[in-house]
Image 1 (tube, rainbow, N blue to C red):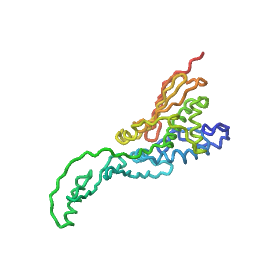
Image 2: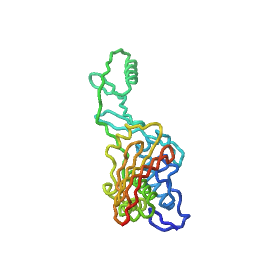
Image 3: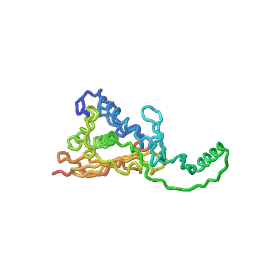
Image 4: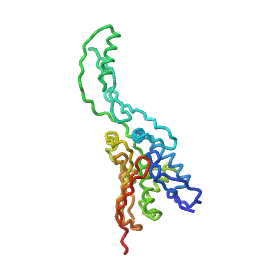
Length: 289
């Protein structure tokens, strides 16, 4: 018998299967625990990890490093489209914003707006050919700003990051961690959502870095994919940072209870190209009173 760390029920050993602490879709093949029952594991996969895996910049990360997940299929990236003042902009899987090409006509003629100058010239020449005319055109450089795209961050995204940090703390401190009041809040947030669809306040359970959407697409950190957990704890408190490709996605309070004392320390855990390549723990046990 053992206790599931999500539903908090004691179950037979054969009711548990392998749980990837950092999701497989982020490249983790080796960092696992055996303390989540099959029912909770399945529901978390369906209601939290699957939506997380298809969110905008997680797909970009997976495409960048060809991370396939359980299905072994490459993730499909949908180019995001937005408009401002009638001008169309597209964000591609590399995070670059492409404008047009788009023809804008008025009483004096027409203009063509776009990021690809060669493509603009081809469109202008084709319009001239169809009209049976020859005309001169000039190219003007303009800076177009103010386009906004959805970030793909929602409650399920935050919960996925919380699952990672919660399970990492359990991996480090075991069942004693579940006595912590903050751990109980995090477990409850996961449980209530996957079984009942209930949401807790995002402010209460975690905070997404507000610059994450921009940073995720503008920062590139080499050929290797990396996911990092950074835990910092003292006698009675613990905090976690969840980092993907060098970008801090979530800062989260993961411990705050005098009933369980953490000691003092810092953990840096890195998954790189599918394997746990660093587990650097600087730790001093709690003081004996």
